[in-house]
Image (cartoon, rainbow, N blue to C red; front, side):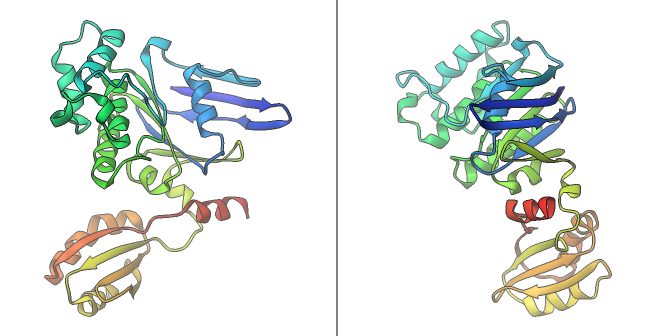
Length: 292
C-alpha cells in the first residue's frame, strides 16, 4: 500500500527525515513509533500529500480520494453537533452512503450518547474520537492517524484501539504513537523512527529479540505464593517474581506459548485473577537494543 525509497525532508541544515525506506503492506495495521520530534508527523504529512519531501520517492497504491488523515489535535466548528460534523464528513467523502453510516461510526467511536451535543462542549478526548469517526465514515482504503489515542482516558483509549484493530483487512492503517504498548497490542508491523531515521521495521516479535526474557504481569486477589509456585513448575516459565503482595511477574520462554496457555494455567489454580498482561516494552529498551 505504501512504499518510500530514500525519503528525506530537510529544513535548512536539519533533516527531519533521512533516507526513510517505509513498506506498509495492504490491509495491515502499521505502528510508527518514536519519541516527540522523531519525524513521525512529518512523515505522515508527506504521505498525506500535505508536505513535500526534499528527495526520495513515495508510492501509494490508492488515489488521493481514497486516503483519510486524522491530525493529532482535530478541530471542528464548535456550534455543530457531533452528528452534524460526521454527516458533513460523509457528504464530502461518500455522499451516496446510507445515512445509517453516520450513526454506525459514532457508536463505534463511543459517541452515541453525545452525538446531539455541540462539539464546543466536547473534551479533548471526545474530539479525538469524533475525528476518528469523521476519518472512517467514507470507508477510505488508506487511513493515516497521528497519535490517535494520546488524549484519551483509559476507556476512550480502549475504544479507539479496538476500533483500529477492527479495521485490519478492510483498510490499511498507519498510525503514529510514542506509546509502544499501544502499537504492540494492535499492529501487524512496527517501525521505529528516531531523529528522522527508520531504525527498525518488521514484526513486533523481531523488535524485542535480544532484550530481556518476555514477562507477563499477573494481578491476583490473593494466594500469590501458591499461584507463583504452580506457575514456576511449567516448562515454558523461566522465572516467577513476586511484585508486591498479590502481583506476579512471570517470565516466559515464548510469548506465543504463554498467550495460549497462561489463561488456562491460571484458571487451573483456582485463583481469582484481576488482570494479566505482557510487560510493556519501553522505547528506551528498544532503542538500546537497536543502537548498541
